[in-house]
Each structure stands twice: as structure tokens, then as C-alpha cells.
Image 1 (spheres, rainbow, N blue to C red):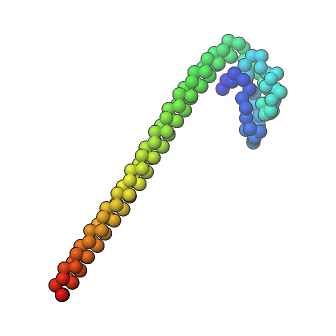
Image 2 (image 1 turned 90 degrees about the horizontal axis):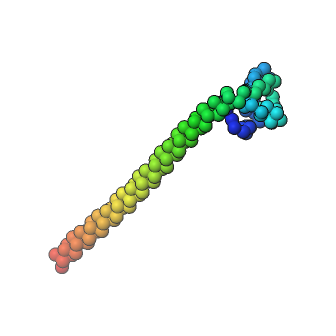
Image 3 (image 1 turned 180 degrees about the horizontal axis):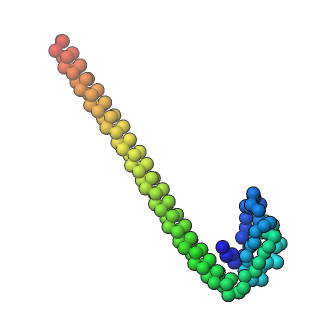
Length: 127
């Protein structure tokens, strides 16, 4: 992994790891900065890479970062599209429920009207 600047991390990023026995490779000219930052300064051995290797890693890291950013953007677009689809589905469901309520109300009106009409005819014949 290659970083242009010292990456931020939580204090417990290496919790349980034996970093005091590990070697951390850093870009040329950055070891003094790295050694001053916790938790990176927990590494017992910090080795600077030569400039050519650092540049090669840097270019690869930038390409990887670009791919990751593109993937993140794609996933974000997909998530937003799914959220929009869900909103549309919920709106359609609400509209269908409202339509069902209107139809039920209309049926009750017709039934009430029919019953009242039948009662009226019955009363007419009773007289």
C-alpha cells in the first residue's frame, strides 16, 4: 500500500498485531514524519523506498484510488437509484391503497343507496 501523506487511523488499528516485529515501507523522505505519528511509530523498523520505486508505487496507488473512487461512485449511483425505485414503489402502494379506499367508499354508498331505495319501495307498497 502506498500513501502520499500519512494516513489517519484509529488508535486501535493494530490492536493485537505485533507491529513491533514488522517492517513498514514508506516513500523516500517520509520516515521521520511517519516515526512521529501514532500508531505508525509502533513499527520497530521503518524503511524508506527509493524514489523510483516510490514513484512506481505512487502511480499504481493513484490508479487504484481512481478505480476505487469510480467503483464508489457507481455503487452510490446504484444505491440512489434503488432508493428512488423504493420511493416510487411506496408512492404507488399508497396510491393503490387510497384508490381501494375510494372504491370501497363508493361501493358502500351504492349499497346504502340500494338499501334505501329498497326500503323506500317496500314502504310504498306497505301503504
